[in-house]
Image 1 (cartoon, rainbow, N blue to C red):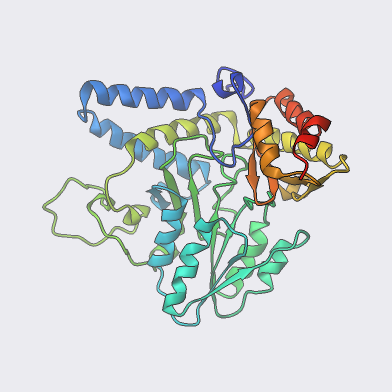
Image 2 (image 1 turned 135 degrees about the vertical axis):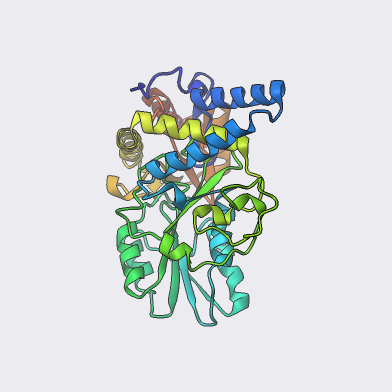
Length: 384
C-alpha cells in the first residue's frame, strides 16, 4: 500500500502550502501520469485506441461503485459536474403544484438554483436557515407530507459543518420524500456508503477532495427511484452500444447511462479513474482519519486564540476537511491575500476565512498557516 505521506505522490507540497482543497485540488502524481499518457496517446494515435478509452470508462463505473459501496456500476451516471447532476434530478422527476423541496438556505448555488427553478411549476422551494447546534433538526422540522425531496450538501461549503445524513434521510423517507446529497465536499475527504445510508441520489464533481480534473463528475441513483424519472435530454451516448446508429429500439436504458446524453469527457475519465484508484489503495478510512487529525489540530489551535471565532464545530464527528473562522477586527480578503504572499493558500467565504487541508498535507505547513494567521504584524496590516 502506498504511503500517503510520500512527498513524491503530491508534488504541490514542494512549491506551495495548498490549504484550499475545498475549492480545487492539485493533482497527485498518478493523476498527472494518467493525464500525460492520455494526451500522448491522442497526440501519437488520434482516436485509434477509442475502444481502450471506452474500457476505461466502464472500469471507472466499477471503481465508483466500489468507492461508494454501491450495489452495481449500473447505478452510476458519468456527468460533467455537480450542477449538471442536480439539474438532471430536478428535470427528471415529475412534479405537481404544491410539492415541496427542502434545502439549506446557505447552500452553494449548485444545490439551490435547480430547486428554485421548479417554482415555475408550482413547486414550493423551502430554504431552511441552519443553526450551529442542531442543523439536522432544523431541516427535519420543516418536512411535511407535501415534501417530495430533501436536498443537502453533506458538508456545508461556508461553515464546514458535516450533516448527519442518516437522520435527515430517515426523516425524509418517513413521509415518502426522496433524499438527495451533494457530496462534493465529502467524497475523497470522508467515505460514504450508499448501501448503508438512506440516500436516493449522491452527486459530486471530481476536482475537490477527489483530486481529479475539472469538468468531470458523477451521479449515483437508486434504481427504484431512477425508474420513476423521465429522460429530459435523450441522446445517442446513453446506450450500451452507442455506435449502433441504425438501431430501432430507442427506449432509454434503466441504468445510470440513461442520463448520459452525448460525448463523454475521456480526459476527465482517465484522470478520475487514476484518482479513485489511488484513494482506494490508500484506504478511505485511513485517509479520513489522517484528514480529521489535521482539522483537529487546526480547530484545537484556533480555539485558543481570543481574537478568532470558529464557525466550524469543534467535535470531530461534526466536520470533515473544512475549517471556517473569522479573525475579529481584520479584513478577511486582506488576510487571504497576505497569506498567499507567503505561499499559503486558503479561501475567503463571505466575511470568513476557509482553510481546507487534505490527508497528505504536512503538519509543518499547517503550523506555518496557524502561526501566520495569528502573527501580530499580519493582524496589524489587515486591521479593518
